[in-house]
Length: 183
Image (cartoon, rainbow, N blue to C red; front, side, top):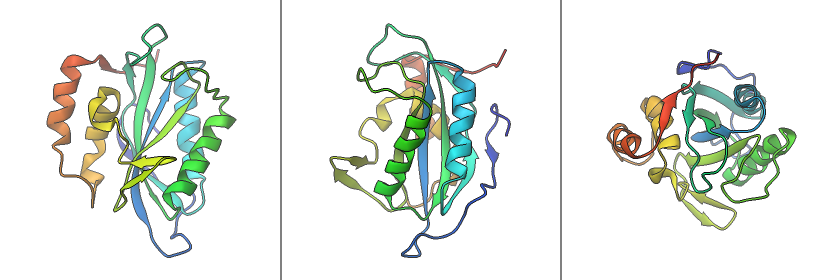
């Protein structure tokens, strides 16, 4: 897959979950330690390999300033859209396993990481479960999420009616988000 453009993907796994439900979900990928681009690529491949899951598209990759804890390296960020039959908490568990396999260590909130995989929203699901809040509670305040999400928003269905493109333009004026140029 070309990291620089939104492209449709055929993941190797597809199908409905145990209850027959298939939902679209948007996930945010981020990394600022090690080979950042390779970490995002490996995460996309791992997501595509999940059972009952298919990666529909990936946004371009963006280089972004850190938020919260600013004294650290810049991040690479990307959003992917998947169709999955996994229940949201099972999807979370599997995303956390992908992070762990990438060497993720949770030392400081908003701190450096080899890989971060966040579930932003899942079609038809709202949750205030302490393990997984959906939509993601800081989603609409983060340019590093909203800008790449805007690139894929045509794939949204059954989700919020926020004007994502307008919000992305507004946030981009306040927070550094630049297209990533490998090399």
